[in-house]
Image 1: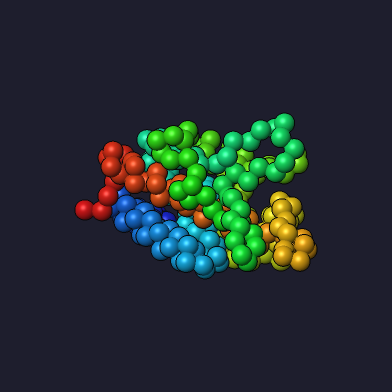
Image 2: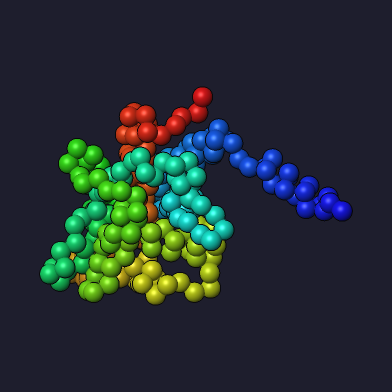
Length: 227
């Protein structure tokens, strides 16, 4: 006897596969999410970086149960990513901010993304996606972290897609305890820590790199657009 149930499941699975057109539409939907959250972050809503981390995870991070959207669309092998991170000098004992800088004003200092103050597409080194994701982009002491770690820290455990009861210790120090160690002097000669979330500012800069990369490769015809 035929296993009708098994055959039905096979047909249902085949029929439910996403079309290329649907994947392309979802890609541009996520790009719009990335751009709207980036704009909100730039207007002062730092928490929007948590939404950015989820979109970045959808684009680039693989798991046992799912493929990244870039892989599903076979985009990764055709493009190179904008790399705006400050190079790491292993002999430099000072922290390397990588994707972030400190802005000083009358209210003190704050960690902010580099945005256009980093290297441009014309002057920066472009990297394949895997190297761009895994290459360290910041350090303090002997500890370093990559874009992939920054994305998964926020998306997986700090309010992007999940809120875990315990954070990675490195993530906690960088985001909650001014782990980079910089301080500013007040008018009363008191030392105050730099404000802002170093990790969320880094996430915003990664989103900037992605947006500029997509614009470049759409213009070159490497990324499909919605018809």
